[in-house]
Length: 600
Image (tube, rainbow, N blue to C red):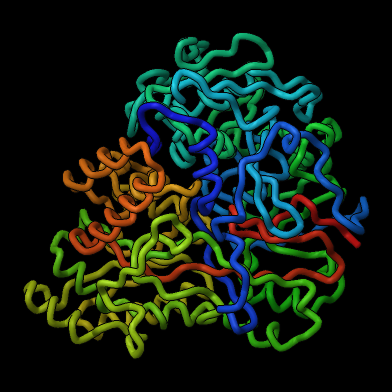
């Protein structure tokens, strides 16, 4: 949506303010855990861990990983198949992680050996230059950028990546840039309803490419956080030659601009990435190209991957996962094994898990409150490993977000409330005259969420609901719940800020304009007061003041509308085989970072 920076913008001051706050990233796959005491672990999502890089920081090659070697195959075990490989449609942590290997955006995140993060130019020479009070942003492409077929990457290819987002099929990825260029909600699509596929382009006074190296964005309003918006995977390079961009079918084989390219995709089963020989490391400050190949397999449940990696036998020694976590079933074994210390990490993620309530179907606020009080947060978290998996949540935004305040209207963090407040829930349901209310509860068919579904159903039944559990293929789950007419009453969702201001959380989740297939207003909240307040806060020029206002609004939404139940703030506990090195945590995406991995 729109930035919280309006009016006259001083780039340096605002960029420093944003860089000093906590970055996050989109939707999570959940999970996590590790050794205690967790309170003493340093949090890589702390405020002073982030900064805005210079042109020098944006130059390649990426700093060498100590001890790294070239060659070999890295095996990757993933629970869910990637819904999309097309950068235009990517917005979830597992896909955000894999796209780093074959896709480059205008800017990107450079993570050093200590986990410190700098936003740097990726395809671009720097993080951008602003003018016209922050309404105009200019980017210059680096020399010697090429696609996997050897063709040069030009400004026309960056324009293609932006303009294809206007097509009606491009619904699942972030839409900041097209909305800033052409209008809020879905209205931006009117500016180029067919995308670039019928030979039309946006006017030069909206998006200009005066030469092969220059891209100029002319926004309707100032947007000081543009450097972060163009780090999203869909603001990169897609061939503009009219042949390789196959619109909604491009997801079957996106053309690589990164160190690896797609060799073979077996939908739902496997993905093989091999070296892209046209990638020039001198242009890339973020990525390496150590392994010959990434062999990615889908359908591996998290307990199974954890046990295999703990056993560390055969080819599993050269195996990792981007997002599969060590969960309850294998957690104690991993925690007690001293040999895993050098091949695990436990880190705080920037994500919040929720139980969304479909307000189109559950219209009575008291019924929604009954669901909220009944929800057994701690028991749900226990299915992932308890404190090792995360922290019980009281409010709608993560503690890592600037301006966060402790808020717990449903008493979720109170001791002894592990099973929810069933008595209060029954009372509310009785007051509403809805005892025996039927609830259709959708959940992914993974081991953890099958267990969670039993816990949730038991609590809701105790509160007086009738519960129909509806299992969804985890490969399709995020697509199904993001449909407006999804047919479900409650379902798990997850979210984190795309960058460190509340404007990347509250409008996306709660603005009525975001009620659309593929959008993130999962609860279908349509509250005129909320919309008006979002519009007001978006006009606040002071980023620090706006941050507090976003948190206040989120707290009001939780109590006044009750669109869902905050469940827990995530942690990620990852393990990998002893035959791999160079694996680190990516604080922005909350996953294992594959860009420096090597086979020992």
